[in-house]
Length: 97
Image (cartoon, rainbow, N blue to C red; front, top):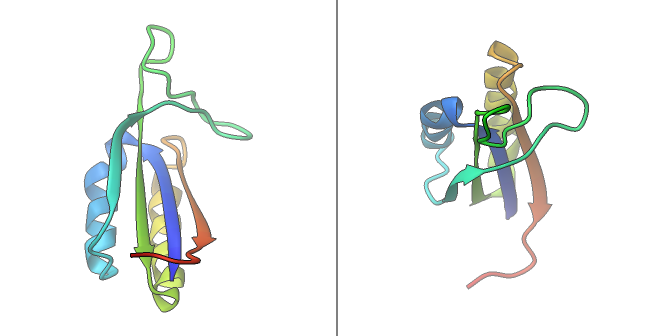
């Protein structure tokens, strides 16, 4: 099992949920409002007067064999609108209940 953490501009929310559904990744936890900025470029997401956009985040745990498909679909979405911001990170799940 792998944990996939997805941070994205709020404009991507519905498409991210659709990608999870199409990738057969049912369970997730979402944070609707998070702040951040990209490592190299892109607009900050601070929810302030100067930087009004906001980000969201989703954490999902998926079987190893679904990770590649999920990341590929997320990569395609990011390529469609690269200035919005979308990042995904994968960790091993050591244990769960």
